[in-house]
Picture (cartoon, one colour):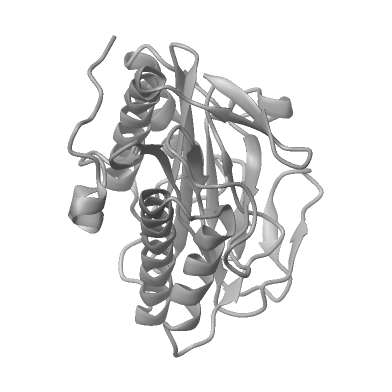
Length: 285
């Protein structure tokens, strides 16, 4: 592991062996998200989902990344409908048929973090909301693919990821989705949030180079209306100003000399990225 400074950024580049440790944490996150996905149903509270995720994480010998982070009181963020990110689970927030919920989860194992999010329908959901969630996921994968191609070419820059995300969203008309601008992806490693910040919009060819050892959490956030958001009085929950429904997805990925490894995807990203995924995943140490 080493740190390099890029115009006031301190970026932590990981060794292949350290990326293996991050993969272990990523698989814990994947398991917690899958357990919550199976549990989502009308009548289930977001507090119940939080209990499920924490149990999976601790049973794996890991610790929830979110719990206690800057005072955050839970193991997940459970953002329903107009809630965009950082909504605190509550026994009073009970899921209803037609809701759309974003579940964000992190785990730290052996000192290394994984972070990912999924958007899940509750029962029968309006097709246009499902479409938005699909567009968000496709945009996330487009960003990850751009990182892989940029590293392979030796010419890639961080904002190539941002541009790929925005382009995927803009090409997915109709309708024209709002791209939330106040929040985005981030570096990740021995801390959950590290440099660099990864915008979900922007022009290509800017910022630090995309090189092996770079680990990022890529996380688009879309809305059915205006991208403007506001934070509620709890100091955490971010909601759309116009009340439109939002979607949020995220994966942790790392660049290796011969490809990308999506650390929070059970298949490493192979199903979506094909040959862009490394064929030589490092051995555990």
